[in-house]
Amino acid sequence: MQVKSHITTQRATHPVDERLDALQRWLAGPLAGTDFTLAPASADASFRRYFRATLADGRSYVAMDAPPSQEDCRPFVHVARLLLEAGVHAPRVQAQDLEQGFLLLEDLGHATFLDALNENNAGALMRDATTALLKWQVATRPGELPPYDEALLRRELALFPEWYAARHLGKPLNAGQAAAFESACAALVASALAQPAVYVHRDYMLRNLMLSEPNPGVLDFQDAVVGPITYDFVCLMRDAFLSWEEERVLDWTVRYWEGAKKARLPVAADFAEFWRAFEWMGLQRHLKVLGIFARLTYRDGKEKYLADTPRFLGYARTTARRYAALAPLARLLDGLQA
Image 1 (cartoon, rainbow, N blue to C red):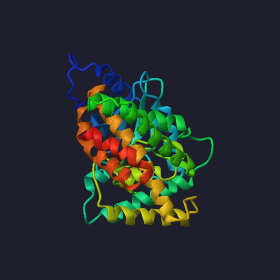
Image 2 (tube, helix red, strand yellow):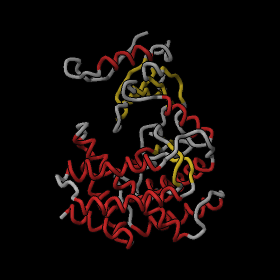
Image 3 (tube, rainbow, N blue to C red):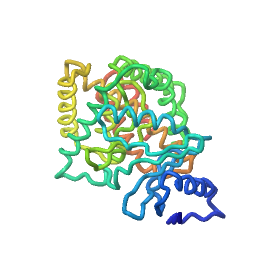
């Protein structure tokens, strides 16, 4: 079989070419008998890479390269199965070699919700995303996924003072600021842990949702856990790359909350209580993402993420200013940006 490649990496300067060669050799097995071309599909914030394998007859698949020393394919395979069992359109695993870190996946297409969304289709796309999320949450059962526990929530929050404040801004927290931050963290973690626990994608946002049939196709789910019921919806509403006006966020959140009640999910009976939990969960995520984006820049050399930190800082400051219990955190955030 002839294997053709459109990859343009240069072997002399690109140390991952050996894995690319190994991936091409492996694909010759599951794609036996058919010529194919291989082109970059996407990359994410981890060490995973994705390539689109296009066959001579026009069919296409997506090949994942996940170096075993840095990534584990097994959670992806497991969560893909859970999503499919829930009736959510996740890519089916066509072939796998967990020892080498290779997967061959169903191709869900080229267009993300982030690419396709406009004023005319925003409502319909958000309805589709909400319907899929409710299916995922309703399917929750014990023992399938690790818990989003206090230790994980606090590890995430600790990224903010270390990587965003100290490394990016060059402003390590002083004793008073550290105490204010710890007090806010304790409140945010307590709020998160008090929520009903369901399956949580952990990055349920527009660039991880694909225009497909059925809609949406869901990607980047390998870090799924069981945790706070508001988490995935706040990811969708407080997106990393697109901001919505508050009235629209409120409207969509009410629609989700009503759908969750109809689906008999254990959301708060009072919307004001649900909204507060939603906002505080979002604040935990915003602080985490600020730390992660700074770490991606300074540790991993992925500088593009820093461009979106002002959006998350805006989310965080807006939420902290709304609640008296979070006023010390609001002052801390304002002080860091002074």
